[in-house]
Image (cartoon, rainbow, N blue to C red):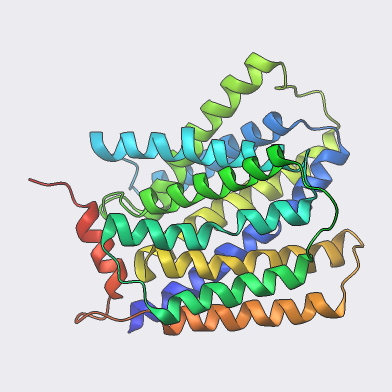
Length: 309
């Protein structure tokens, strides 16, 4: 029971930190920082912080071959593709629709977990996901008019890549700490962003000095704390429940935009935030503890992630 209690707050902390990402990004764009420059600096600074922490703790070591390869895929491929497809989707469709489509990922994570990790798809967990998604729909509203098909495909692709990132991230060996996972994910993300940005001419550092403040906020709050607490929490409550709890992120995004960017906060958005919280509570109570107090789905994920002798 103790581990279960800590798992949910860690994932909610992660969602809160990720929720500030749009605000930091908006400030960065005001200083003419390109997408790939922002991604490269975000991942590079975060990697230094992750590895610096591990070095001070005497825990800096290279993961085994299988885990290292999996971390390379997580950071250099899946997380990078998720970022690129989502930022590209908002060029063709309204941001609210892009966010709604991105948050299909909890449902996709649940389906992947059932197929790959033999999780049981409980009615309560499914209800929690649907309730949270309804709350997000209230927060952002349903856009009208014609919809660009390419934008929809990119946004759904972003949800799929993020779902794969979560499911495969849960399969990294338990011997690799959440901070090490975050560090290596960021290293490979920085390499990927640097290569693509350099090849496209989008990797530039001629932005105003004041642009470093949102870059640091993005790297420390919305990357180091967000990624580290997410993997720590997911290891305790499992990927499906962690995905549903992550739907608290857009609630924080709306509040942060209201407080820091001057955006309007409406009654339906406040009600939608309350609905998301109801879904989060349902997700937490849907976790079934195993005999040793570890949630059953997390234990199953750990068994699947261990290499066969």
